[in-house]
Length: 289
Image (tube, rainbow, N blue to C red; front, top):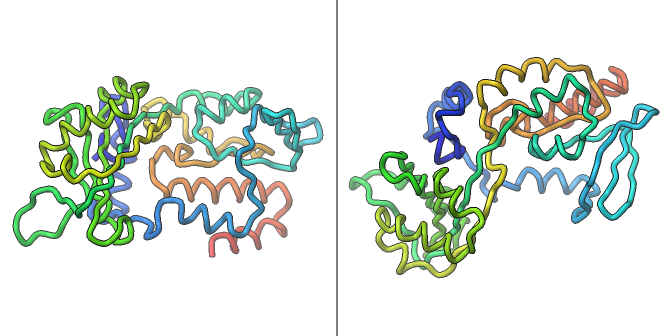
């Protein structure tokens, strides 16, 4: 579960975040998905905001008046009362080189695993072989000792009915750490072929059913939750409120959308607390409703 779902190397990551997630969801079978995809919540929030995309930020600094100054790569400068860096910790560290000293230990300790996902469009709803009468599963977790190159397969058409057109399927191949290291800079064609040959061991019809494949590379797949990061997390959460805040699942070292939402709520509460209790109470309650 740790290596397939979170791309973790269990020799580096602590088990506690995974166990806590499993307890909260009553085991792996209690995990849920967004009906219309992982970006459902982000799109709902974006509908209520003015959103600008395609504008890369080069540097974030706190301004002398207590606000924030954002410098874009095109030279444009934006000032604001507050800013939330909702990006992976290593990215936040690069964007915000002048971060206060008490924030740096946790930011520097928050490392990430990497992963490659190959999404395969297939002409029929393929499935892994199961005992007769059992409910179709959407994920096959492959232990390192079993393969060591392919971490797992997910059958997205069993995860949610609208993941693929009726009568067709969507299958994803996930890399183990060794494959990620070897294939990250290879061409898409090489990546697909390297994984497809192994995946047919578990789903023999995959090659013949394949219509098109898309390669997705994730240099920041999931926060690793190393002992150092978990040891420093408490002090980071207790730091003083400032104009630059952070959000993302890495804040709580749990690679889940729930942890990302929790971090977003925390960032909102901290920012609103700078404006006084009367201002902070209403918007936070509205956001949580």
